[in-house]
Length: 188
Image (cartoon, rainbow, N blue to C red; front, side, top):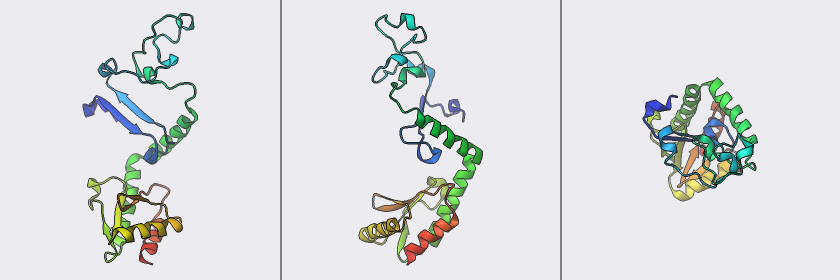
């Protein structure tokens, strides 16, 4: 993606979930003109200007580096998470983001078309272009929705209960058989 086409000053993206990275990973992009207007958070010596010259590090006061380095984390940051993020990104890029999105939407369409209308209501927009790569539904009452969620959980069908709705978030590792199993549990 070419961020300059968006006309944005900032772009932020979590690395977990759809990019398959661990919690705590993600991306931050900023227009170069905006960097000088921003204050770094807790300041760490590797985020200072001139850190490559160890002989001059004792000079005060330290100034934040003029680029992304100014937000570097301390030595205690978990850089192993970045290796996992890289592996996740490589997989997504090999599969192609469009393929991932199409697969997820296809599984949600399968779910929505097979939910029993006498017991469940689709709570997400029906049109794929109006929703993300996941879908929500609910039973005919909040109590029945919670009970259904608990049933799915006992049967190791991983969903989440969000604002009284069951959220289904398929990914490349999910199959049509996974959706069939979910629907079978809903109708049982």
